[in-house]
Image (cartoon, rainbow, N blue to C red; front, side, top):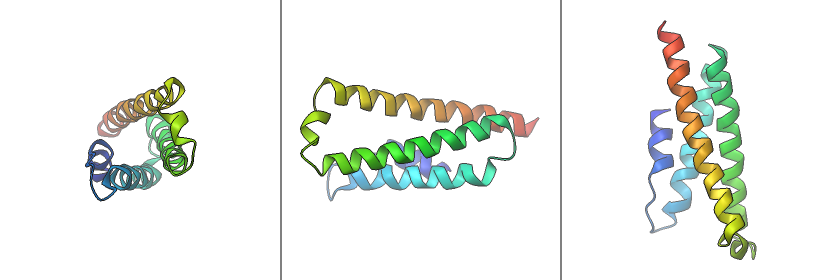
Length: 104
């Protein structure tokens, strides 16, 4: 999960790493939360959010390969980017609360 958190925040703009690293990080987060989802409710919520983040990143990657990439550059596309960022912050919060519950 630590690698997933790190890779979702890194963006390198060469060799298509700006697409590969966040996608790989989302997969690692999903797999990490999948292993912990039965511990408490916060980790269950994190599991759901990581699945949502994985699907959204996949959809954005596919949309970038189509003519819909022009739509992503408009105001509606910025709203999608804002919702992805908000989902990532909620994911960090659920991880913090879930680990806090586990340590109790």
